[in-house]
Length: 92
Image 1: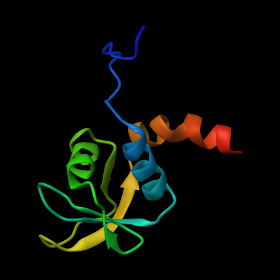
Image 2: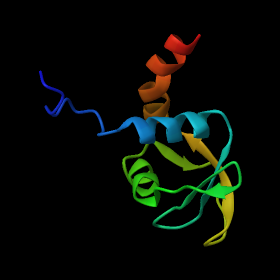
Image 3: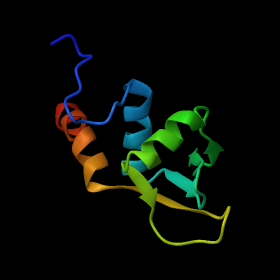
C-alpha cells in the first residue's frame, strides 16, 4: 500500500489530526451552521476548508444546539475519537 488506497477511513491529514486533538482537548468551539466554522483557543481556525471537511465527514459536531451562527463547544464523534486514539496512545 502506498497510502493512497481507499481503506474506508476518512481522508485526514496532519493538520486535521491536530484540529481533532484540539477538539478532543476541549479547546474548540464551532458555529451552528450548515458550513460550521471552527474556533480553537478563541481564534478562528486558519483552514476552514479542513474544518468543514471534519464536520461533513462526521468527525466533529456541536456539543449542543444553538441559534444559527452561535458558537457552541465542539466535540468529537466516536469516529473522530477513534481516528486520534493512536495519537493519544503514542503520546502517553
